[in-house]
Length: 79
Image (cartoon, rainbow, N blue to C red; front, top):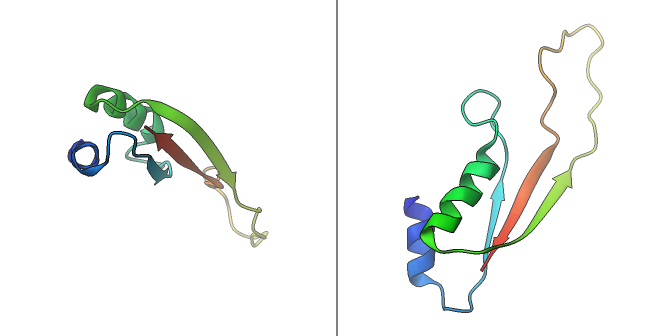
């Protein structure tokens, strides 16, 4: 919330805020949704959401995978 409040304060009225977010597996698995909710409360209007994917990496076959690997991040554009 402090980041968004400060961004609202320093941006021009027609300014654009571009933020890069990535989900965290344990703490905030849906943090982009929480970010959008707080952005609306502070007075921003969500304008666009871009999802960027990474190419899959080659894993060692002997390792056991416990969770799906995070292969994406979000760019959220607000006005």
